[in-house]
Amino acid sequence: MSAILSSIATKLNDYENHETSNAYDVALTQKVFVINFITSYLPIFLTAFVYVPFASLIVPYLDVFHLTVRPFVSKEHAISKQSHFQIDPARLRNQVIYFTVTAQIVGFAMETIVPYIKQHALRKYKKYNKERNGKAERSDDKESPERPVVSYDDPAEEVKFLTRVRNEVELSEYDVTDDLREMCIQFGYLALFSPIWPLVPLSFFVNNWVELRSDFFKICMEFRRPVPLRTDTIGPWLDSLGFLSWVGSITSAALVYMFSGNAQHGPNGEPTDIKGWALLLTIFFSEHVYLIVRYAVRAAMARLEPPNSRKERGERYLMRKRYLESTLHAETDDDKDEGEGIYIP
Image (cartoon, rainbow, N blue to C red):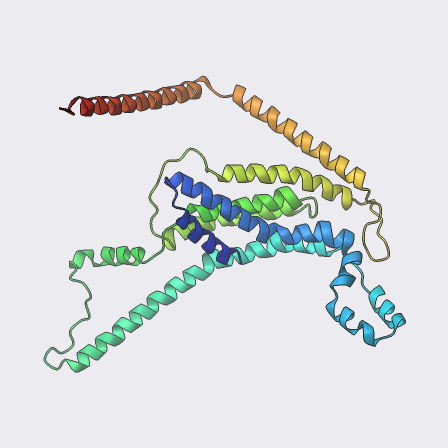
C-alpha cells in the first residue's frame, strides 16, 4: 500500500507543476510522510488507543455474523457467545515487535537481496537470449561459418570496460529520498512506541549496523554511480522528524500511564483504572516538558556556535543581498533605456 500510494502521490505532485525543484521536493516529502504515517503507525495507534481500552464495547457491534444470526437464536445463546470475547493484552506488544524486527528484516530483503537476484537473473536471460539469436543467425548464414556474435565495434582493450559501463547504464538511478524516508519511519517507531517494548532501540541499532553496510553494497552494485551534490541539511525531512518528536512526547506519556505495571484489568482484559483527567494531565505535562527542553537545547546550541560559522553565514547573506540588488538595478536600467528609446510624435 505504501508503494502504490507513493506512486500516486508522485504523479499528483508532477501535476502541481512547482516552480523550483526545492518546492517540488518539499511537497513530495510532505505527501510521502503523511502516507507512511498512516500505513506505518495507524495500526499500532488503533490497537493502543482503541482496541485495548474500548474493544469490549466496540467489537460486539462489529460482529456482523453475530448480528445476522441473532434473530434466529435464543437470547441466552447470544449472551453466552458475546461473553466469550476477551481482549488480547499481548497484541500491542506483538505488533510493535513485528514492525520493529520482522518488518525490518523483510524490508532489508526486499530492498537489497531481491533486486540483486533480479538483476543477475535478467543479465543471464539477456546473455542466453543473445547467444540463442547468434546461433540462429550462424545456422542461417552459410557463407560465413562460425563468426562471433558481436553487438558493438569495441576496441579489444576496452571491451571489458565498455561492458561494465553498459551494464551500469541499465541500472536504475539512486534516490537518497528512499533511505531518508526509511530512517524517518524508523525514528517514528522509536519516538512513538518505544515504551511498549524496551528493546526497540537495541533492535534498531542492530538493524542500522547491517543497513549501513547493505546501503554501501546497494549503491555500488544495484544502482548507477550517483552524482555527488552538496547540501547543508536533509531538507524537509527535518520538519518530519520534529513532528514525530512532538507526537512522541504525547504518545509515550499516554502509553506509560495506560499500560503501566500497576494497571488493573477487567474481566475482558481491558484496563479499568484509566481516568480521563489523569490521562490528559499526563499528556499536558509531558508535552510542555518536551517543548521546554527543546527550547533550552536550541538556545544552548546557538550559544555554542563558533564565531567562524556566524561570520561565514553573515558573509553569505551579504553576498546574496548584493547580488539581488545588482540584479534589480540592472533590470531598472534596462527599463529606463527602453523607455528613452521610444519616440512618440
